[in-house]
Length: 338
Image (tube, rainbow, N blue to C red; front, side, top):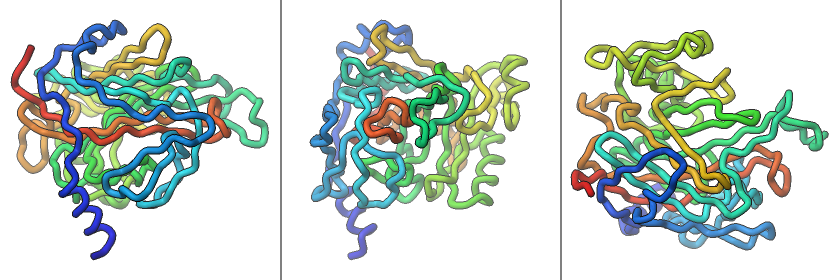
């Protein structure tokens, strides 16, 4: 049995953790009391010695450092330990209402989600004391169609422990000391030609499901309104008005460190201490399923979701990019509500 078949076999026989599939009503306001009764999941608390590990159900014999580097892409490769309190997830939650998916992150006390350094250039390994423009990513990856052959494996983006089949992401980027942009990703390409096809499909309000490797995807800001004139001027590709009946909605294709800020439909709030973070992603941002013509995300669906935090070198020990990825959670977008 080759390794990929073995991994899929392991996935089939391994039951993922299931969340409470009850509809919640969360306000993105920095008051986290409305998360109190949402089921909680833990992630190991890392330490600077690097003695804390995660285990993937697909590789039960391997141990992965909880906080680790971001350039280890092998399917069973072990990344290097990179301690950073700002990405050291210890608790996470998932919720939804009739229109949106919500995620919650908590890192260790003293960590600040979204914290970046400020400077004129990127981090210089040869002069680490020089001020630099730091980057931070709050990431939610979603396996939407429960087909492990579409989308990408998490390790393709150096997210460990790995899992298969992630079709889309919703993310927030902080850059050079402040919020920069929020966006969705469609992972359905294996080369530049397929990525260009994907972009054309997204312009037609279609979200595509195909096998993918990580470097090839579309990254787009989604507005359920007309973007501001300032946002329009700074948009790298667009904005593109979606076809009717969604013609009041727009997308702009983006990239990391784009000339933001871009305030799309995704919203977030952070606690006063900075170690708690909540994010809302409207279902509409995942467009329409290109195969069915229906909403890509809608009530009644069951998805797999994995959360990650990732940041540049400035506050890591040793000085390198660091990330932490949670277990993959199975979650049902239930019709029931409280």
